[in-house]
Structures are given as C-alpha cells and as structure tokens.
Amino acid sequence: MNEDLRRPTYPSALPRARFEAMARRVRQWTAAEVRQTLVEPILHPSTWRIRALGMSTFVGHPLFYFIWTLWLPQPYEDLVLRLMMSLFGLSLLVVPGLTASPPSRVAATTFTLIFWITLPWFFSWMYFCNSGNPVWLASLGAMFLIYYHLTDWRLATVGSISGLVVAWAMFHAVGPDAQPITFALGATNAVVLAFCWFMAITLGLSSSNLRREQLNYTLGTMGIMAHELRTPLATMQLIGEALRNEARQEGEDGERVQMLAQRLTNLVRNMNHQIDMQITNARLMRLPRHTEAMSAAALVDLAIADYPFRSSRERDCVVIRVHGDFRFLGSRALFLQVMDNLTKNALRSLAAASTASRPGDLLIEVGAQGNRGRIVFTDKGVGMDDDLQARIFQPFFSTDRGTGHGLGLAFCQRVVQGAQGTIRVKSAPLKGAIFTIELPLA
Image 1 (cartoon, helix red, strand yellow):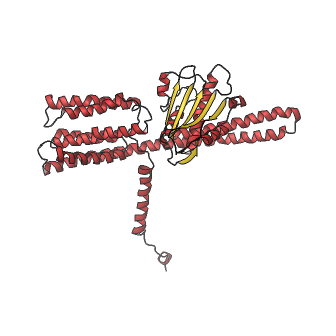
Image 2 (cartoon, one colour):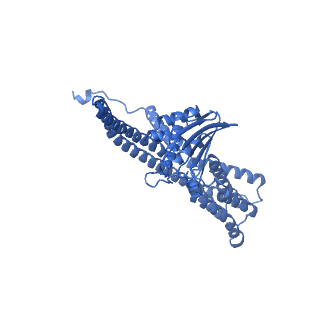
Image 3 (cartoon, helix red, strand yellow):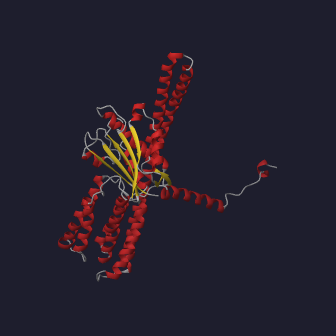
C-alpha cells in the first residue's frame, strides 16, 4: 500500500483556535494602540503651535461671521456665539501657563475643553442650525480632519461623538426654528460625514503608530549604544580592580597606582550613571504611572549618597538641610532621577562659576508647610536670565550647547506634574538659581 495513504490525516485548525488567535491579535493591537500609548491633548504642543491655534481661533470666527453674514449669507449666524468662540482662542494667547511646553495637567485639561467646544460641539451645532446645508456639511467634514490632526485619536473620537450628541440635544431643546433635515438629505450627508470620519480615524491611527514606532526605534538605538558602551566599561572596571589588587603589594608606589585605579573606577561608575540617566530622560513621553509613598528626606539622602561625584571637593559643596520631613506619592525611581538631574545641573553651574566651590554652595532643603511639601535646590552658580528661565523646561532646549540634550528639566517637570506637584525656578545672572519642587502630602 502507498505510504502516503497510511499516514494519518489531521484536520485544519478548528474554528475555535482561529477565533482565539484572532482575539489574541486584537488584544495585542488594543494594548499597543489604546492602552499603552499616551493620550495627548495637543500633538506636538510647542509654544508656536499653541499660539498659532489660538490666533486662528481668535481671528477665524469673527472673519467667518462676516463672510457668512455679509458676503455669502447663510441661514443661521450668531455674533455672540462667534465672539465666545473667539475668546476661547484669545485665552490661548494671553493666559499664563497655557503656552508652556510640555503642558501642565491643568493646561492639558483646558486644551481638551476649549477644542471640544470650538470644534465638535460648535460645528455640529451650526450644522443642525443651518439644516445640514452644503456649507456646513463641508465644514463639519473638515472639522473631523482638523480635530484628529490636532489631538490624540482617542480623545478626538470621544470628543466628536459627545460633541455631536450634545449639540443635537441642545438644538432640539433651545435651537432656532430651522428647516428640518429631510431623510434623503440626512442619509446623503451621513454617508459623506462617515467617509470623512473614517479617513480622520485612519490618519489619526497611522500618525499615532508612526510616533510610537519612531520612539521605539530611538529607544532601541539608545539601548544598542548603551550595550556597546557598557562592554568596554565593564572591562575598564575589571582593570581597575586588578590594579587595586596589585597596588596592595607595591608599597609606596602602590598607593599612587591604587589612587589611579580608584579614579578609573569612579569614571566607569559615572559613565554608567550618565547612560542610565540619558535613557530615562529619553522616555519623556512614556513615563510609568506606578506610585508609592516615600519620604522626601530619605529620597534626597539616597540620591546624594549614590551620586557619582567627580571629587571629594565636589561632594563637600553639597549640604542637605531637613527642616521637616514629609511623605508624598510618586515613583521612587523617577524621583531619584529628578534629584540626579537637578544635582547635575547645579554642579555644572558651580563648575562654570569663577570661584572655587565651598560647602553649602549647593544647598538642598526639605520642609513642609500646610498640605504641601517642598524640596528646594539652591546653588551659587552662574545663574540665568529671564529669557532662559522662560524656556528652561522646554524639551530639547539646553543651556549647555556642548553636551546638553535639553530633556533633563522637561523630564523633571513631567515627573513632578505626574505626582500632582509643581516645579519652578528663580534665578538671575551671576546670582545662582533656586529650583523649588512642591508636592501634595501623602
């Protein structure tokens, strides 16, 4: 008998197995696209972009009011409503803190509310008030594309649906006496709007995926570079240990060798510390959310104890003063990184000053007042002018043009704001700087 006929036959994958595989792929996609990626109220929230959005809203609404009233009249226009929308745009230009980058939690909430009112709610309201005519059909379709390009696709989806529903309910409750939208017109418009909405979601998803992939590639490249750097560093560490062992047998000459070996070990420790810090800073937009209660004084003590000072003189210039300890909620690992960043910046500023550093040139104070705790870094370094202070927390802005990447203080601000706190700076040229972190008590 033919051997092929003797072999047992196996049925193809069962429908249940196929369904489970498909469900697994859906869960993986959902985890990558929906749960893990940050929801950003404004994509690429630079100061210029926020101001441009504010100016277009501030100028655009009065301009279109006159176009649709005097030049190409439409069935419904309301000057008061247009001026209200214009004032929302003006707030983005004049309210302090709304143009800061990265935005604070309050600013992000404000952006979300302003653009929900001025985009999905307003355009849906005007669409119903104008009986779904071609002008407002096109405007509503354009709104979908603008909204999804402006904010994260999940916020845009929730905002579009809620804005449409709220505008429809308000129109039927308090809207003007407009011509009803016929079934045929409504069905035609629904097809057009569905197409616009679908394309907006598709573009939003592709944009989100592109940003995530770019970040992953960047972090992957940094990981490879870190690995390649750590390999020779590990060899240097072993050489330092071998030198120290040999130095113990060489008498007086061995003391010098042991000192050089210790310097080599400190250099390796410092370079590993810098690698860890740069990788953490680069994850500015993907910081973990876990929190734990911690002591501010213990946090500062640990950060300074583990900091890789370049010399004992540099270590001696740091003084910690605890007026009153407090506990707060946050990520210990991230806040240790914040302490490292602020310490590194202060020591760099002191090194740039002309005078030799002395004990107390970097004073770190911990205290609490009311329901807020404070960690204050005060240095006697070179300081900075008002223009630098206004930009110091912006990503990729650095006062150190040689080695600075401009992410350290932006990272600090994001971590502190994630713990419901604030960070601010007070400084003047040649008069040092004061960085104050305020945190709610746990």
